[in-house]
Image: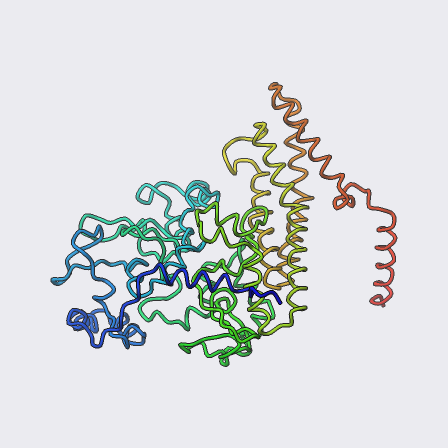
Length: 483
């Protein structure tokens, strides 16, 4: 074994974060007079909030309403309430007074950038294609759809109240009035702020589900999800100390693999992290999967951009080998990489290149989604291609195949390629010589792509030896199952 343990950089980063963060505050030895006055009303006026807070560690630590909601007079969202200056939102900046390390780690994660979606095609769909301008000058769908997961820009009225264009909202990349980014309550639901709730896979399923990123459904299909349902009561998720390999081993949740503490087979402790990217070795969000340090750099996450994918993979392997042998884990990653490389090389990369030919040569309109081929390509990579890649990453065969690459291939060969050919034919007779030349380039690119061995079945050029192999296999199959 190398002298530098696989998770060592994770530990170093955690120590670094601790060193640059302010020291966490000490626990008050009694409830403040301000909070006592708050709860004298709120225990009847907002009973649910009061009761939830009463179940929390905050209550037991004498941290109450005023400690979290107090504000300065010059704060943009401050207002007077029964003689106290408070704000509605408790932001990560507020939480960092006690949870500095966690907030610092979150700030370096992809979650912190989730609200930067204005220029994305997803946002264009919700704002323009599906939406209108009738909700305070914008799309009601975006406010109640996209931004509820990604995060809104919270704007403040003159009286300190919050505008409905951005509040209520617990999107994980929310832009807060105090300049901070994020929402701790995206995962730690107020006012209990339960660690147990945040550890449950259902918690992540608020956002990580659906046609384009069905991690919740994928997890439920996987052996991990099956084990969770069978042994849920054995996982001790309510425990303050929750260490895989020490407190439980029966099943992992999302938090187990991506965030939580782990006792390795060598006896070392991998600490909890609020940066969910420290154990991920592929970013499967784009049309073509890329390594996470590349996307981190593009997002301006400079510290994480220095952590290469090999280190992150080794971090995850340390988690995996609590329950699995090294050979099992290594072979899983070979399988994972194999599907990623298959999708990237056969569909993702060439599909993106062909679409770029359309745009570069003005073969279709510059407006997005007003041409059928744009919808087809969008669903191939954004829905079906993502399902494939997320499915294999979490060992869910149905999402890897039938909900994934089967759909990619079906729409690639029956819709995408024919639609590209149609665009080329249309532009070959254009009066614009530049479009004619562009159409010739597109035809050439399509022909070049389909000449590759992986597309030979489509062009009728499957190698004879492969034909014989398939014929023999079919005959054996029929012999086994025919009556």
